Image (cartoon, rainbow, N blue to C red; front, side, top):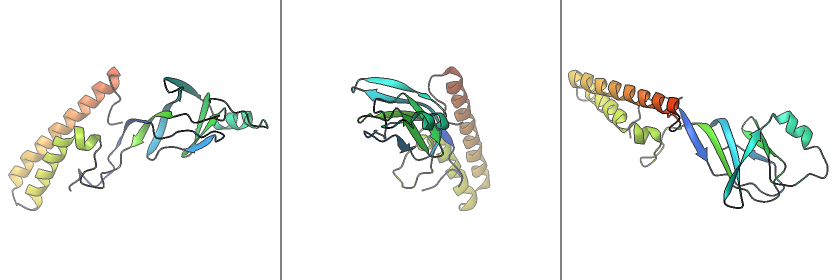
Length: 175
C-alpha cells in the first residue's frame, strides 16, 4: 500500500461514542488520538443528549471533596492531559458523546479507511502514479502530469475544507 508522503495525516473534527460511564467512577481516559475536546454530552434515558459544561480541573477537585461522594447524572467535565473528570460522579451507566479534534493516524492495513482514503482518494491515486512514473518507470514527463493533477486535487480539497469550515455545514477535514 502507498501513502501520500510518510508524514502525519493531519487532524479532523470527530464525534466519539465509545465511552460509557460506570456508576461511581468519575475519571476516564480520552479516546485515542484526541487533540482537543470541543463538547461533551451524556445520553439520558436512551433518548435525550444532555450537554455537559466544561470547567477547569481544580474546580472539579474542590467540588468533589465532599464525603460521601454525591452520585447523580453528571453536569460538568474537565480535561487534564489525556483524561477527563466528570462532576457529579455518575450514578449509573451513561453513554457519552465527545466532539473533538482528533489526530488521524496513517492507515495500517490495506482495508483501513479515514477521510484521506475516502475524500482524498484521487489525491492519493495521482500522487502514487507520479511517484511510480518518476522512481520506477523513468517517465518524468508523465510524472509531472500526475504531480500537476495531485496538486490540483489537493487545492480542491483545501478549498472544500475551507468552505465547509466557514459555512458550518460540517466540520472541516483539515485544521
